[in-house]
Length: 314
Image 1 (cartoon, helix red, strand yellow):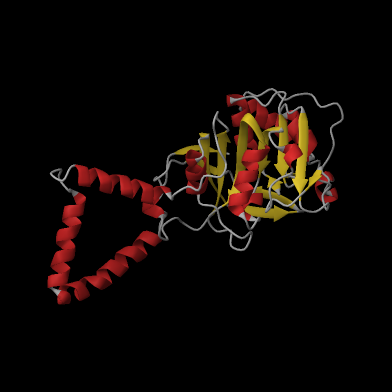
Image 2 (cartoon, one colour):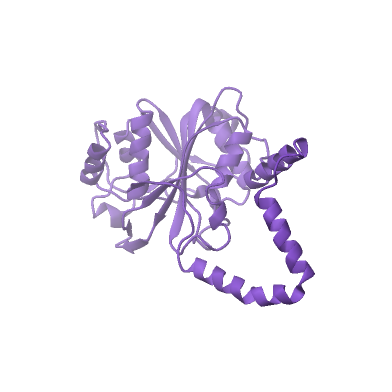
């Protein structure tokens, strides 16, 4: 799992908002870091973050990245102020501290053990995604933060079992009583060189539930997109509540509101209803407008659909 420039910048911004000093972190899969200490120092200065001194800085466990001066995960997170840096995995291929299967409940001795649980895409590579999210809850200490960083979303075919829609984290954490502190869409064009992930500056969009409704059906564009989300385990938070999809929950609320206030003007629904009624009464008109509808849809797909607010370029 990799921590690229855009993820690093967002982590620095999160550190500035709520410092990691003295915290413990558990990585779901040991992270590969795609930056040097000089690059990290430069980006930290941009975010007005003071890096912590590291007694024995180490280079990446991947020798190809070590030759380029890339940091290892423990040095990277220690530089952000973490006092304890741990990792877990299902296999010992990268030297993780704990070995267990996230498709099953995490070991009880680790429950409530960590201030931060961090992942960069492990969630879409574990088949039992609800169990993984429940494990994040189990592993977090009260008041701890779940950080889902650059989780693959749009245009990541076969990189995992799933591509994560941002509503997944918004709906899950809301249903389970967490505070959702930040959620972004990261849009980028990646390329690999000498085993290191590079990209042009990431476009960072602030996501709120419903902000992508107009782009849901093929109007998003062709770039790769990942999700960055931070949620805090509030008092009384749970991990096993099954969420309902936010767009339908909002529809149910609107339906209930219309049922409670039948005299309220129907607005757009009334106009759509009149148009559908007209087309049903005149089948020839419906057939004649179909090519125009097809052309409009094709034109829409030549340009990106409406996007949430662009808040940064990292």
